[in-house]
Length: 296
Image (tube, rainbow, N blue to C red):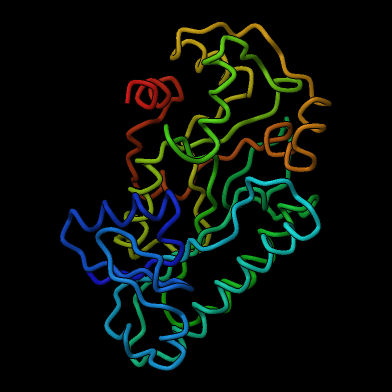
């Protein structure tokens, strides 16, 4: 296959490109800069495509992972960048697809599980309604609206949970206090954490491209979410460290501002569509996922 990826320099994008490159697929990254080189792929810039969209004729699929990182203090300027980067990327993909004579068969657009809102008691899957109640849920709702303007190809909106990777993403920061021996539950500990191992994250994107029956929203989360308290206990066990030092909510809010809502509030999100279509998770339980990550 011939596949183009935006956001290919991010940690999911790099792993995805490596996965496909090893399987003999032709990989292209679409970037704002020609200097954004990703091993295993050739780079095409948006400026080049503006003048010559035919550079991407013959694509089988586009995967749009582009967007400003949410792992930063949410100042007014940062919020604007987070929102605008996602909407702009989806619009650029829509415009590119419109200009191609031969459309790709499928576009996979990243999204987020925040679209369901937060709850300690409710369970969400792809059939659940959107609930805009905070900054992130608002961003994801507008992000998906922009993605819906991609006309022609089959559109898959992958609503990403907490991606567990040993070197990148949120996990190293979550594990750091445990490695120091001062880890413990965050806030009440009752908030749900819907997670997925990086290897399953990569495999499910490939699965969505290969499976022509899948379209619309797809929850990219493992089938067994856990509470923050349960996650901490399993992480402590994997690292052979104590789990004795709770981190009060007010400390998180002082340290991270509004960004702290990512860990203080949560959603119990289930991957109904993936299970319905027979996707096999390598890491269904958080203890196995954490053991693998820590051992690596």
